[in-house]
Image: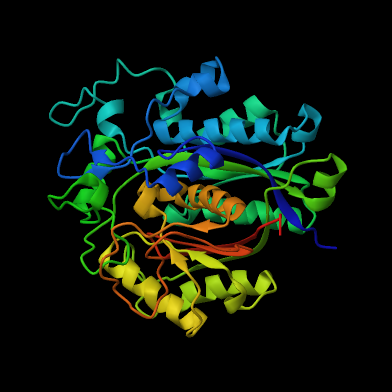
Length: 403
């Protein structure tokens, strides 16, 4: 018998705040936190201010092995577990599913590179842990006492949403009662900025940083990198009710696929992305027109936004489902974008509000119902879409438990 899967804990560290209520206050007030990159003033970024992991997890010798993105992952996971109020014995058999990106802070980790050779002497004995994909997971298991199934997902910008989907499936199909799922990432280091700028993926126009992220606008010219982490406690409904847990939402549909087309560009026909999205909607047991709103991937890059607009037109076939683009508020969090966007969506569903797509003056597609001005509305079901390098496609459907 399949289980309903509910969200009972939320942990978030973001440029908009460190709780879904703080995030909502900033969204409703129109507050954003964009600035010039500390490493390249031709690039805008959305950094997290004053992040100190020890204030969240306490003193622990293993946090020295975390790169900044992994630090966001660990911090948000600890926050989610504490928020859910789970007992230690309940954590022992829990699963752990996280989306994690590569550590691109090569300049920071290896400052002594001269004419090619690296000066290895200053490196600590276990320096490689800052580059292993499962280091964050290992630290979380030790902090939270988790010993169940685990998976670190590295599917680019789809990673954290896919990690949440994989945890959802394990609970739905009876393998687990509890799973900690989410992602954390930061590409704001010198190496990260250089890599994406070299790939011509970033907006480098001479405009105010707060205006650089322009999803679906005709003048869009690249994404703006952000950073942060968001994590969730997922439980079977029976387990959550047995312990009297507070429920913040229900995950009810998940779809995933690969284009098999190009290393960076989406497939022109969007066929496999469409399959992933329709699979999530079908698993949720609803029709496309029953979705209250779509949280788009909406990066602000030329190809991705056009392909996603075409995809939305095919899926909704003239139904005026509102579409939001949260990267216009927080930047693009790479492998953590899906988990962060889920956290913000839970905030929006709690308050029944949809925010505008910032900096959207001339939409690239007039058939899509892009949200141009924030408004209050009943939000029962949200669809979240993420698409990543390598042709990774992922979609998740979440319901408002209060309704």
